[in-house]
Image 1 (tube, rainbow, N blue to C red):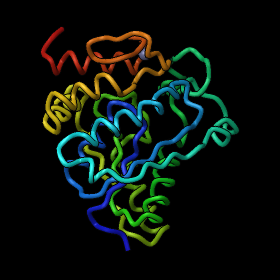
Image 2 (cartoon, helix red, strand yellow):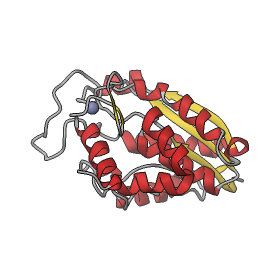
Image 3 (cartoon, helix red, strand yellow):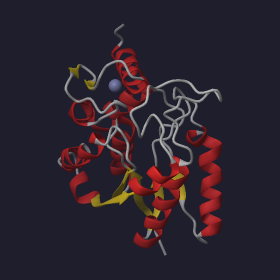
Length: 234
Ligand code: ZN
């Protein structure tokens, strides 16, 4: 049996998943995290996970709520499937199918399946993930219908009653910054600005008001534009 208010957060070290972790810590008495190494060019995001967890453990009563961290290595499996611009040195561009070549086919389906397997083992009923279809790149595995279908498939396939929660699904990036502020005020916003990572190119050598990154890749542009709209600045 899984505890109805115990949660597992898909936690990559990015802005969205960091906000999701805070969202879960504000709600649930026991929260574990899972991260995936899949040969991402921005593997530096995985190094951001510990500082983010440590920082949130010092906020409110979140320290006693924050449980184990799990890291699953998928590098070899994803490499065997084949390269994308997110996992190899390729120019980021739009493909003939209208999807950016940063799309890693099946990635989020795989992540949710593995997360459900961990949640099953650990007795965690809620799976919290940062997928968003509001201002994202049109990745089909981020869509609300995909996530709902995955919940049904996993509950059937594992004979369980998981609830997949996606608090950012209908929030744009500006609203995601606002959510962080509502959850943890200035200290949480400052932690996410400094310690989370979004840049597809893995660049942490440049610090902008909105955080570290190259400043020009699609992930940096989304993060910067959202931050500026939230701040009310051009
Ligand atoms: Zn960038």
